[in-house]
Length: 309
Ligand code: BDR
Ligand code: CA
Image (tube, helix red, strand yellow):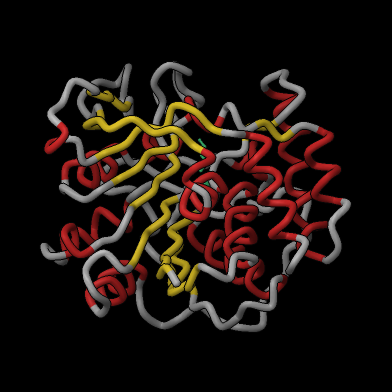
């Protein structure tokens, strides 16, 4: 089984990503690490604990990470995720606590303890934790398995500014460090996730699955659909974060092009823009930029996996 650490800021779509991972027995979930992003660190950590409790997966440890970006003031996206971060779901104080240690140490320790390449990391929020882990342990870059991040904007334009996507914009210095670290990173930016459209029919297909988690997922997706309709004017909500888990499970549902990705950190205007260079020698192309996603396939996968929980 593939070892996996999920680094996230739940977040409505992070929540769906976590539930998809819980329903996927081929993934060995080594840790969930949390970061400040969509809402505060306190809330993202509580929300991760709520989700594992809903799924009956208190065996997966939750580690609280960093409560702010490396250099920027903290920015939230509560208008897209609700004040508590989980849309319309009722939040509560979960039974099981977070682990006593920090997320950065947990990432380093779990990756280094296993053979090179054995542990994948899926990043669903600002990349602060992973950047600090790479700083803390210089061997980490070569020991990491695939790193798959939800972040970035190129042809589609941005969702927080004209040129940037929220996760990268929120902590551009962290993202720049991760892309420069030399590890293999696949980026699912808006070019890919805007193809994965949560339409009413797709949400209904998930709702028709048995079990509590399928119902929870349908409610989360419906919340996002309502928000997009109100704020952006779309009849569907893009499904961002769960694509990272879907890519690990079914890379055949995506088309990714080798490249080198760099992040703008100097300009206020284009802060957090992902500059994707496709004109690179194969040996220098340690990143992949996802250009196509099979949306029907991703939603079928989610419905099927959530129905088993
Ligand atoms: C990303 O930003 C957050 O609001 C979502 O959870 C997702 O990770 C999309 O830009
Ligand atoms: Ca997120």
